[in-house]
Image (cartoon, rainbow, N blue to C red; front, side):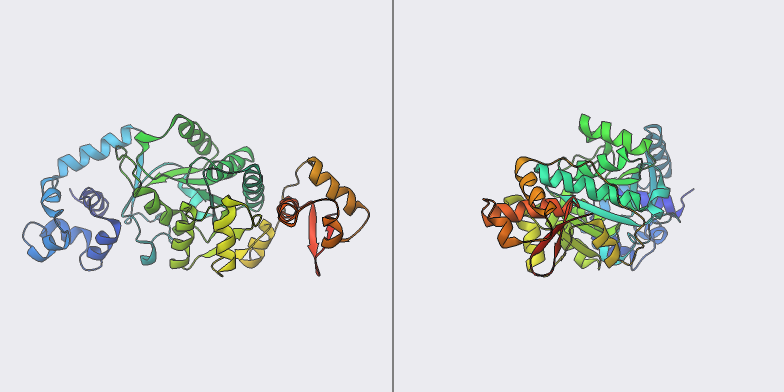
Length: 357
């Protein structure tokens, strides 16, 4: 017996893009497509060459066996017919996937979600910021969304897991193609009540096209997107673009003026596409979410940071006096931003700096 959920699953096997499927579904219901595809020429034409293959799969026994096989692999399926389908994701601006494959706890999607994205080639600065932001979001009851890639994504997921918070990892391919490292992190995420999800069938091999498509889901699930370290052509900027199209808030963490891996973040800020933030407090305040607390971290300073710290112990100090310690302006900018991000110092009006007490 066909039902709405099974009909959505059948449609997902067509190979048509989510954008095309949503366009067709704006005219026909999934059950109407099941009933009419074999005889409705206009409907067949709407699938742009995918209808013939879809008709071959129009078999309820095949669909039932296919769904059972997926379930035996420990993978669950959620369709747009499911009452738990995330409301933010179900907006037309997102081109919502009609089927989501997942492992883990759907309930964490009911929390307020904020995405953290960035480069795969994170610096130690980017790693520290990603961990700090993720931990502070967890401390405030926020679910952190990211893409399970190496770099900023993984640092954010790991920080959430370490703090026993909730995180959502969105894949750019099927579950069969997770790397050993990703499998290990995914298990930890699920173990802490998080969720791994994808719009791609388990055997779908990821491509250079599917990762950008994955990014629309990261932003689509989230109330806001925070970009931490992104080069000029980073995939994280694609996520930011999707977020803008979806009417989400976009925030970017600044980097040094010569920092290649922060060039994209700095451009987002400069071009007015993202608000500059240096702490989770900035983000939550802008979103009008009550700030509960932020996580304090142990104070560890390198020799350059220590020089600045020792100077500020004397009291609030102007930038011109700090630069006399022997830094170039670009070096000093990077160090000061890093110290601000770690909430060790704070910037006052008129380019004055002081320690955070």
